[in-house]
Length: 259
Image (cartoon, rainbow, N blue to C red; front, top):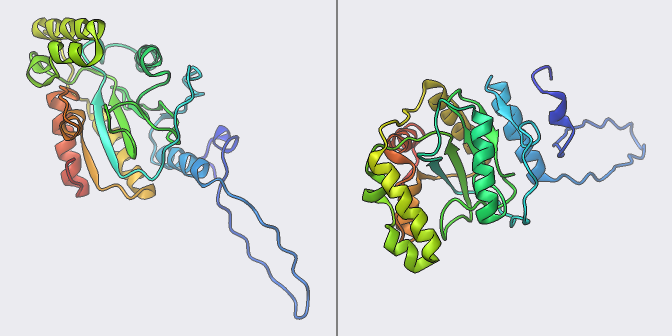
């Protein structure tokens, strides 16, 4: 138990095992114990990742805000979607600070963080949205999909215009303000000269996170955000060209299929 931190034991419930020895003709009194398997699974994932010597920060560790609105429950995950935070984020920044920035954006848009896990460029894994709740990382297709975001910009110049939904389409679907934001994003992407490449620590962390999630859920599908978007009739540039390389590599390594 030396590799389990004290705070791991403060919340959630755990499976336990006991052996009862009874003498002949003796009465055995039993006690029924209810186990919250979702809380235990969440905690089991955290403990397993820390056992593998990766730094994992829970929502309380990085001082996440309470959701502005209550997220809907979700479980029985069958797929994983990979994202990148985009061209307003950088490996040069502090990981927790970048996650706070993403949290502010997501709370204003969705009422809570949209992703379940985040990975910074130092390989630190963060609990973003509690996995017992449904994310908001894929338009029209979040149920049963775990969202993992790299706190970096893994695209190259021009991807937003090439793979994105387009400012006009966004305007028609979500209104003028959303359309203007999409257009601004495209213009920034056209002139952007600084992008991130995934670090070795990020690659090791996401591989370990995916491997751990496969131990707890019957996951068969993994893809980049843009792949999931296509299955729902939309377009997204996320997670960038480097993010898509990561998705292809993980699929091959763990024998998973594309969306």
